[in-house]
Length: 64
Image: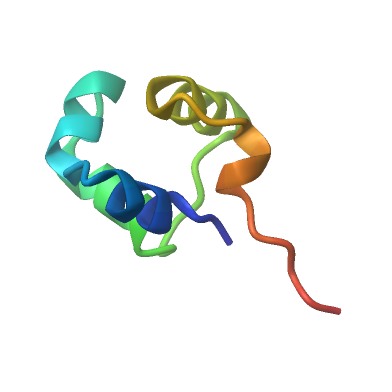
């Protein structure tokens, strides 16, 4: 699970803007935001860099 959606909402950033910065389609970014698919570690790191957050801020711990 990831927190991309929460971070985007906290910062008032649109998914289309993030998609443009990442060089990915809106549909791909939307699938990350909706947790339908998970970005690779490289992509997650790039998202963190774009959003100026620690990559750990984008990850949700899973409960065991």
